[in-house]
Amino acid sequence: KDAQDNYGIKYYRTKIKKIEEDSETNDLIIHYQNLKTGEEKEYRANMVVLAAPLVPSKGTNELAKVLNVELDNYN
Picture (cartoon, rainbow, N blue to C red):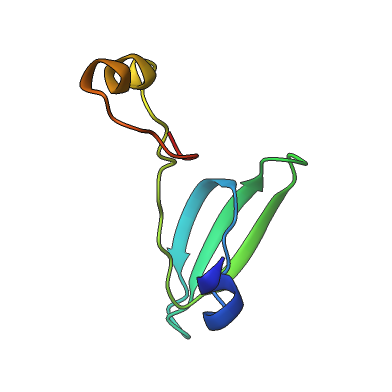
């Protein structure tokens, strides 16, 4: 949230289909599918960072109990 508010960084939940470079402008052209609507779109950017979602494994709660470790809202 801080990065969005202070630095203009945008986060998108999408399925990336393809990334191409525009040879004239060196822009990256991202072809993606909006996961909410299914609509396919393009977006131009000068940099792209791809990140996979981080999800705790199914046994995290049980392991935390055995190790006597507190979990936060992200676990």
